[in-house]
Image 1 (cartoon, rainbow, N blue to C red):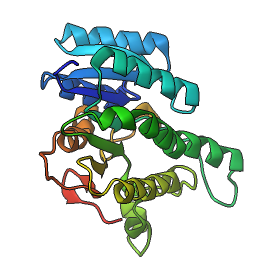
Image 2 (image 1 turned 90 degrees about the vertical axis):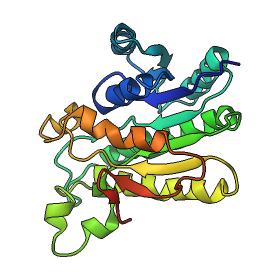
Image 3 (image 1 turned 30 degrees about the vertical axis):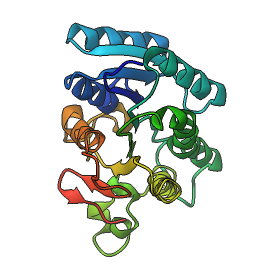
Image 4 (image 1 turned 180 degrees about the horizontal axis):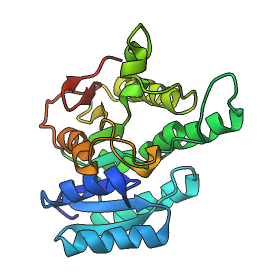
Length: 243
């Protein structure tokens, strides 16, 4: 078994996911670059390796059961176990997303990636995570999924635009995370949710004001929590985010 810490980052070929992979690689970790597009995945691996990161490509479509199973098999062959899983892959869906006008197919597509995809990949990787001495799962969510921030008079300032597919998908993801926390209570697996902030990526048409490097910081922090650290919590750079 490879004794180096091994991480898998989904959606790691660009944006926040790429910077998470770069940040974990800078710690001397081995990093699996999970992505479905072969050219983008291999390009990301090449760039990471050029910067000294021990990176390897992991073909992974989070919406496909067989793909997740094959990815787990590849990581087992490469490292024998998995120490950290960062569920970063996500889509926003077609905009605008007013609830009175939304095509239900858009909601279904977003949930398939942002929620069911996380369940699918997590379940495929759990046997490998259980082999780690200090396993961590980081689910990348968003403060727009906070019901506390979605409600009340300040909602327009704290929860972004009305988006009935994307925002509730993150609320759903937050709830799913807590179910994993409950099931895995008593194990050494720490599971937390991270919000990267409003980062300029193609998901929002590069309208965000934070850089991908800044957005990646919370994931790196949660991926490197010490044994006995928090679990079942929702964080951004400023601290705990209300559910």
